[in-house]
Length: 465
Image (cartoon, rainbow, N blue to C red; front, side):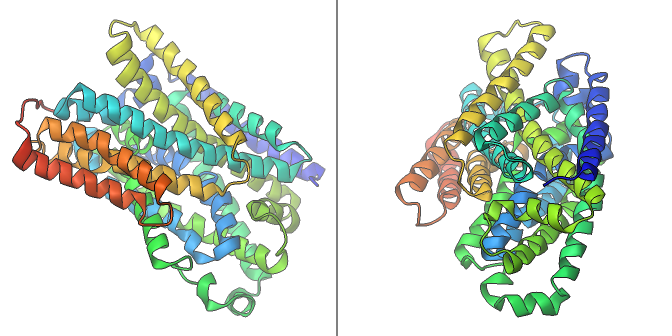
């Protein structure tokens, strides 16, 4: 049960972050402020935007949950996120920041045409949408551990908090809250990890409690499964509107590059300390629900005042990540579907209203899916999400950025539509065979190359912008 010290530190931490979120509202004067901060965002806020969305329930509660079940192979999610962010900073920051675009589908439209942009918006939004479910599941795990509350009510509370954190401040809200979250996460989780390490008896204590395989192997679930998980995470980061939106928002290339690389370097250590906590809880409480490993450790083994900060930080992590993902889907819907296809002449005020209303609708739909899958693994949704986004966006975006003179528009359009469709069907019909991401990428590559070299005439190409 929570003590008075827990409650006081939780309220104080949430109050601090709420004040930051309210401050971000002052930065929003129009729809461009809401979605890309009118390209005035410096490196720390870029890093905050990425971390604020990337390091959430899956990276913390979900990683501890999977570590409780299988050990160190749970590290692949945060390792993959870190690798993906560094690649973003080194290779993507310049072309994306200088493109003048607001969304990834906008870039694809300028190279492959309108149909390509529409299909990219639909499939990548679906991929991000799936990841929102992981955040609501994390909120349920945290809230139900803290208080005797029905999981359905906890899911509703989590969805409402996600809406509240992004619907007013947009990209500024996710950026500023992400900066505070980055500091709080490192302070709280590194401390918690150190406590778990000491209580577990250090290296010798953990080695005495667990066999080397699978618990201390990065491939404890099998090389093919874990490599696929790592690859899908890297690819997902490179293909997701929410993370690329931070690059679009950067003041300049330097700010975008520094921000994403910093985010990449600070993410994997969070996963490592969560693994230590998951293993400690497995050794000492082998019968608990695995998704409660991290929350129960915080309540039982940290000083109450620190435990309250950690609990609030975990809640903020879940909510801020969910908020950033919802914002990414909302941005693509508003700019690539509503503004481009439904109401091209919409006023800026109307666009801002549609952005906010779509946030509410997206969170509501995510809640409905969560309610039907309350007992599923959190990271299961995260890996599935990353794979779907990657099969849709990765290769067509690379072609649009670095090889648009050679790729034909019809080939790009078909690749964007066919690859995620085939990978989804593969996942349904052959769930235990080759990872569907590989199938999707192979299809995408073959269509782009063979189609461009042999089959289709090139009819449509424009400069990105």
